[in-house]
Image (spheres, rainbow, N blue to C red):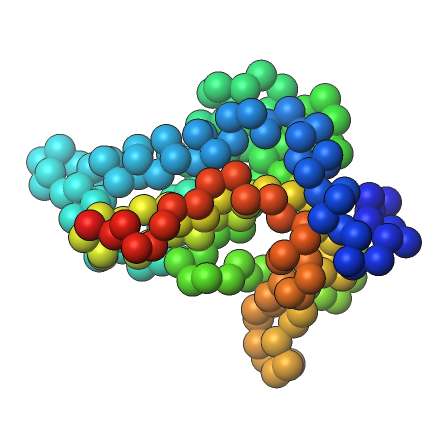
Length: 193
């Protein structure tokens, strides 16, 4: 059941902060994301070639996939009661209470996207619950950074599917993006080196 049920969109913001504060990962989640980012940037493909990821032209999709692997692993190693999800589970699973499990979404664009299936129904993998969203700069930039980390609760009804039946993407409704996600970290784009 959504904590936003029967609450007008104009009042969602008053529900979001207590939801985020109540989550056991909130105190350290931004730090976990930033440390995961640094470990990715400073990682090497192999010692013989000495290829640093920071110096490669890795696609945003591949970067997102790395974040999807590294952040849950970082949390697993640092927070008891959480582990990396598998199969139809959320990306970050709370072992003692699935209510606190988290779906992770990443993007090198200003928006966050989901799969178009998010707009179809709530069946299968639960599409409602806590979400951790991360916007980042492409690794091909001179000093790539995480730009924005947000955390909150989204419902499957907050997603809008592409108009084309063959489109596979969904985006968040404006009122959900503005009122259901709390900013935990943001870097000023003007400070770019």
